Amino acid sequence: MDASLKFAESHEWVKDNGDGTVTVGISEHAQSLLGDVVFVDLPEVGCEVEVGEGFSLVESVKAASDIYGPVKGEVVEVNENLENSPELVNEEPFEGGWIAKIKLAEDSNLDHLMSADAYQETIED
Image (cartoon, rainbow, N blue to C red; front, top):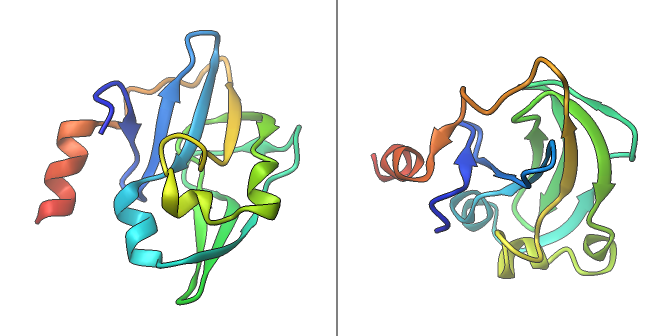
């Protein structure tokens, strides 16, 4: 697991792109609980994301799960590869399986998110 990633309690990961945007996806742990992903309902570019509010949906053979905003901001890009290859969420949760890029709101930061080590501890309990 990439030590630079931050995590929300709801299992989303956040990568700081260093330009005021972050890339968001779901953790390896979350995708393993879901099972084989068959559909990702991508957010619209331009939609506002609020911390803790659903902005995307991942459906698997087992269940559908909301993806919650780990940060506040605006969706500036979505991973269109997931439209035809939703299994990328399973196969490459931290690389090809990202869901959206979000431009952080001015008053948003990553301070409330867990480090990779802290997140690892929560899923081991």
